[in-house]
Image 1: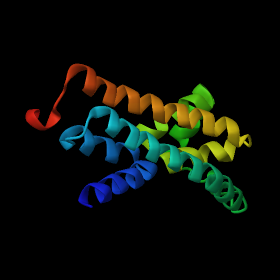
Image 2: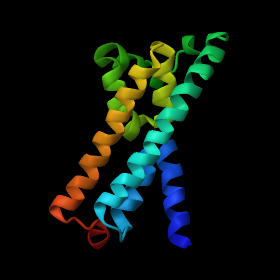
Image 3: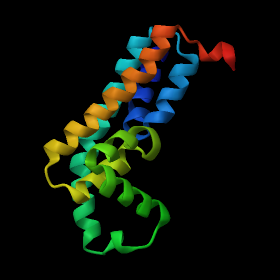
Image 4: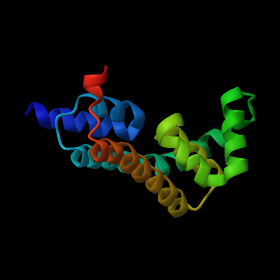
Length: 147
């Protein structure tokens, strides 16, 4: 039962803050690397689906109050990323640096095609999952021994 709860919590955590789920699994998981990869990719995918549709609702609500006209430094950086690299750049940075909810909400505020947002965000989640856990599996890296 403890294993099931741990997997469930990692799925929930990866849906909200992808990197906070990846780091403990890279450091101390005793499962095969590909199982951990599926756990975080599945959780991240659930987060993308939920927050893309929820993000459209939230961005419509916030646009009434001109929330995005405030002069926040981080928001300006995200706008610069979006304007320079488009939705692909925003999607690639969302799982690792920003977080899946924030990336989906910002993407939904600029792009009305939810299918496009979901495709890019899902590809980014799968890319980071395969990259991080693939490197662990390919090179047999055990971070817990190095810490």
